Image (tube, rainbow, N blue to C red; front, side, top):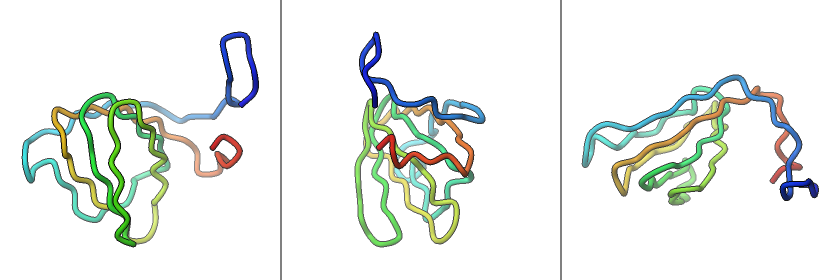
Length: 104
């Protein structure tokens, strides 16, 4: 992040597209067993909360304003559990070769 006229700014991160998601259902309907991200994508949480569990058993919760880089496009993937509804998310897809290490 570098100082800019409107605050600290990252380098421009290329994206391939953007889409919004509002999971349907309540209770177990807002649950996805182990699955892989279909593509590398940032997930920005706009409403509600979700718990993500990795194949190694680590669990983390994400809520309004949190950003997740979903890049587990191979292997076992992760479990998603809606824990506060309604939920809304925006997904920003990024090319597989984008290096976000410096941005973290």
